[in-house]
Amino acid sequence: MKVEKIFHLHNQTIFKYLYYLLNDETLAEDFTQETFVRYFNYQQSIKEGAQLAWLRSTARNLAYDHFRRKRLIQFVPFLQQHEKQSSPSPNEWLMQQDAKILYLAISKLKITYRDVIILRKIEGLSIEETCEVLGWNEGKVKNTLKRALVALKKQLGGEMDEEL
Image (tube, rainbow, N blue to C red; front, side, top):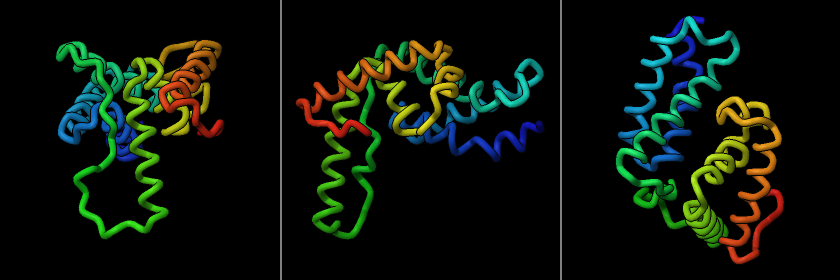
């Protein structure tokens, strides 16, 4: 498949994933671009149908390298706090507050827990897709997600919808 087609199919997905991890639009844009540059350089060695998993793994590695370089393994909630909006209804306001509490709790989890929650629960990837991105087996994904949800529940004071 041509690089242009892969880019148009997946650039928003990769950008969004990086933005969730980094909470920095400029860095997410830069790393999205770098991800596709690397795809261009290695496209011959990537299996047909595995492009998105390869792109997510590469994006994840770029973000982790950034964290290591900065000695900053910290997840910052990715809510748009500076977004100008009209006054939300009481229901919308409560939902926004719940989301802030949830993302703050996620930010306090260890990075592997954050990653599996983002991929499985926020991005909605299947177990198989998550295995491909993280390079883990199915059992590790399931166990880590289970532990992550328990840790998240603990961060939230024991109050969490089982469905998340």
